[in-house]
Image (cartoon, rainbow, N blue to C red; front, side, top):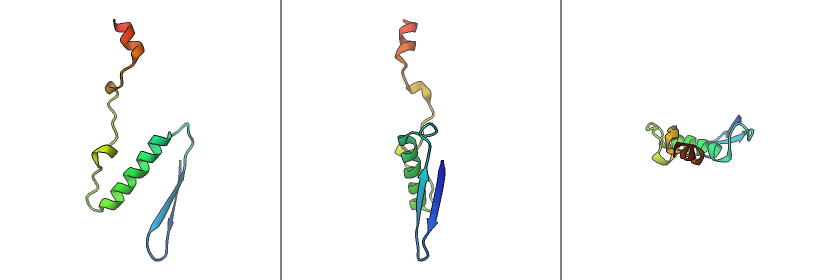
Length: 71
């Protein structure tokens, strides 16, 4: 993943990015950019909105192959 940040002389900035598909999928990069924008907008209070908070709990994913083996 590569990021490029361009600062404008009067105010503001823009962010450009590129990423290999094997490293990140579209949803991952979109959530990263939305999270970053949310943190920048909130200023001092840098907490993420619940819908932007990543979930690392893999037990919520049901694998049909494992379910068949257990029965």
